[in-house]
Image 1 (cartoon, rainbow, N blue to C red):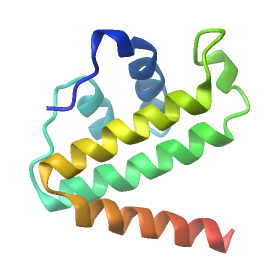
Image 2: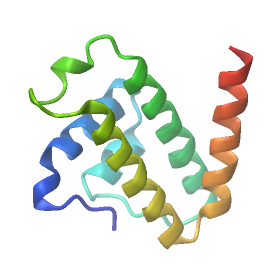
Image 3: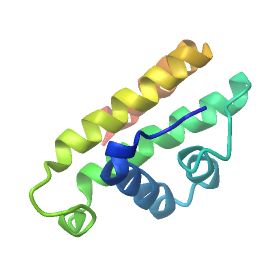
Length: 111
């Protein structure tokens, strides 16, 4: 189960905010611990959506309004990235993560 610790409320807030912003109900459910990733197709969808979430968050001109003052936004995204990546590895979806990551890099290189 994908979970945030009690100390990670700001991280969960950022994750859910951007999952809503990209309109990905599966990520929203995952971040609300209402979804367990159980198959390769779903894992690829989640990983691809997560890559989009990170890109949108990094490019968001209003990101300072998403988190509490005094917090390092890039550090929060890095924590979220690590949490999500480790979850996918523990679930056995390393190849889906790599496929989504390669696709995101390829798309960014084309832009």
